[in-house]
Each structure stands twice: as C-alpha cells, then as structure tokens.
Length: 208
Image (cartoon, rainbow, N blue to C red; front, side):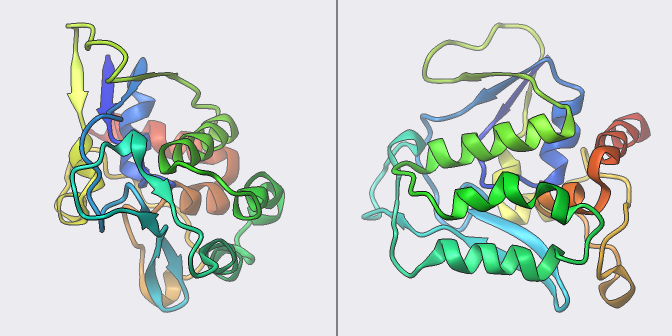
C-alpha cells in the first residue's frame, strides 16, 4: 500500500500511524505550497498547551510548487524553535537521548523547505524503526495499486477533525495540567515514549 502525503515539518503523529501500515511513502512535491499548514508548521505540547512552530519561507503569494519553496533565515527562527523544543521536552523521558539527533538541524542552513522536512523525516523514521521507501509524485506515477491519500493532514482544520489514524493516548509531560493533546508533532511521541513509540503506532493501527 502506498501512502500519499505532502512533505511536512515534523509531521503530526496521525501521519506516522498511517505510515506504520504502509509499504511506501509518496511525497507530493509538485502541488502548490500553502501557508499556515503543516508543510511549514509543527505543533508541540508546552506547559501552556499546544504551541505552533512555524518556519518562515520566501514566498510571494503566487503558485509555487512545494519543491521550489525556499526557507527564509529572517527572525532567528531556528534558535526560537530549538529553545521551544528544549523548554517543552527537557523533562520528557527520552529528550536527552535524542537531542543531538535534532539539535544540528537548528544550527545549519537549508535552502529548500522540502529538503529540510525530508531530512527530519529520515531521522524520525530511523529513531522509530519505521523506515519506508520514499518516492516523489513528480518523478513517477502512482503504482495503480492501493493508495491512501492523507494529504489533508497538512491542513490544521482537517487534522483536528480527523478520525482515522489518530493515535492511542500515550504519556505526555504536561498531561496532568492540560489533559492528553492528540495529533501533535511526531517528536512529542518520540521524546515522551522513545522506542515504545513504535508500539503506540502499532496499537493505533490495530485499534482501527
């Protein structure tokens, strides 16, 4: 089964629930970039609830394919994102084990948003033990077999209304304060549950 998605920034957990059951990941790199979506935004859990992290991009408002969108270095956003991740997850059980795997992303400079998102996805997939073949929609047609289109996960409103692929509850640092917050970035699952994150994804698929 092929899973069709947009390349997302530290994608929401529901995408990885769907990926657990897939054989191949097909990235839609050709569709126009849309602002205020999870293409350039990730949602993490903080002491005060869910907080979005948004990557600034160079975009004139026209129709630009996702693969052509460049990251803007305006505003020191890398420093802000990393500080937000540290503040949110430094007390989580596995942050110290994985921090070095992510810290360098917020020190280097990537020209294209697509490349940045894909590199982060590769690290997340390796740490979870969920590595699947990745192909691009612009390079080849879909196989013609079973295809699950989850591109709507990129839209915050669609994600909040999603029923399929939502994960089983798992430990979150601020759960006693905020209650369990579903559909956060995959790093929330990774930092809070470590290797057992794969079991959460498995159980979420089985629960469907």
